[in-house]
Image (cartoon, rainbow, N blue to C red; front, side, top):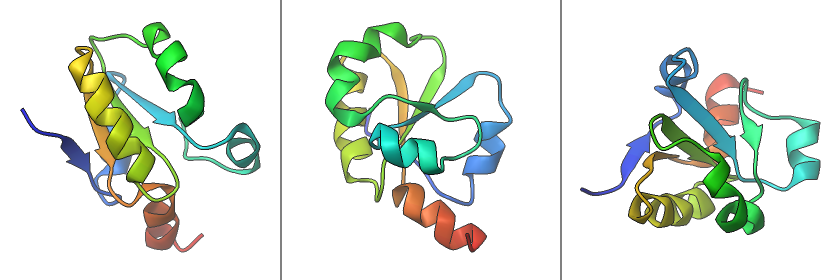
Length: 100
């Protein structure tokens, strides 16, 4: 199937959709300081043990700092049957786009 990528410019459209879950893979401390609207936090190191709490019938968009961890995690979750996408460029790409 191939990995689905979501760009920073497209993200706002997905965030408005109730059928989408945005998962921030960054460390808890960084998530607490600031995060994307509507994102839940599951640190990358905890994903394998926590992914079973996520529904397989919704699109899950993974976000990390720059997109590397989310891309790796997307491949893993795809093999487990999740509808999954990775935010290209990660949290930093959205910050640069919005100027924050």
